[in-house]
Image (cartoon, rainbow, N blue to C red; front, side, top):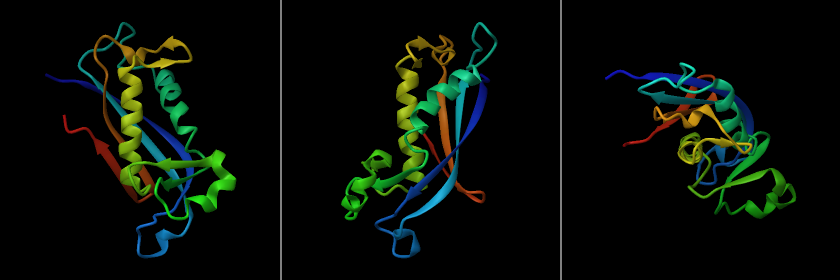
Length: 155
């Protein structure tokens, strides 16, 4: 059976440091990242959509706000305390070094959980919670215009 897919791109600026990297990436540096979220459904909702793009923007944008202009670090980064003065803009990644792969997997989990919880944004249910069964298909994160990583659930 066929299905419909929609995608939305988001742009964020992040800093990170790869504590396990043997070369330059072990130093703090930044990226202009593009995050692409792809949703899938077998059926369209009452408005003939998989999901309203505005609802998707609100749902994903809320999480991405934490990352925009933030420093991403592994939770066990040995230099973590050096960034303590900037704690309000530091995001600790419990899954390991904040590589593009780890960021994609982390965002997939957070966005997928929000969708499973009914896509509640600002106290109102969004079309993302369509009874047609919207599924988060993948999250792709570009680190540079030429490089990206994505996470796709194996189910």
